[in-house]
Structure formats: structure tokens, C-alpha cells
Image 1 (cartoon, one colour):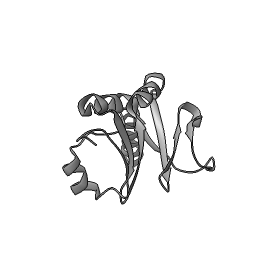
Image 2: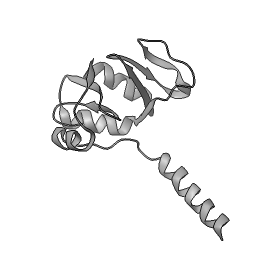
Image 3: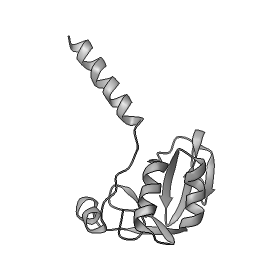
Image 4: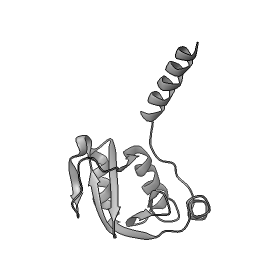
Length: 126
């Protein structure tokens, strides 16, 4: 019985991980949930849209206001600092990023670090 329950939980977790990664909040909500922005880097929204149009998911890592963005198979799209192959990146669904940009309608999109999360913002949306 325990093996069946474990298998079901694992199956559910795996199927959930294939869904869109990321959730959209208003700025105030994000600050209450995740704390204030500690550092951020600006990207031109049009350039950012080109990335999401060609990749299903994007992975981000920020270090001292420099950013690395990886695409499929961890191939660098933007590389501003050196990192090892085993470093942890934050995965976002391009579908959710596209929705964020559509709601925000700002010419600049920001990659931000907070206490324990990496966030993306555009306009009043995070």
C-alpha cells in the first residue's frame, strides 16, 4: 500500500512539474509574499519577447546584478558571468512570461532577486 501511495505522489509531482512554471502577482502582493527586491537587472521587453518566442522554458540565475539566461539543454542565451554545470537555475514557462508582459505593457522587464526567490516583473505585475 505504501509503495502505491508513493508511486501516485511521485506521478502527481512529475505531471505538475510539466505544467507552466511561474505565477503572476501584483507588485504589492509579491512584496508581502516574498519580501522586497534586493537587486534587479533590466531587459528590453522586445528582446525578452524574442527569447520567449523561441523557447518553451527559460532558466535564470542572477549574481551581483548580472544575469545568465539558459534555454533548452541549458544552452546560454545571455551569459554575463561564469557558472558551473551543476548550479541551480530558476525555471520559468515562456507562456507565463508572455502573459506577464502582456499584462504589464512596459517597455522594460526586470529580473529580480528577493530573499529566497527570483522574480520577473513588468509594470505592476511580478
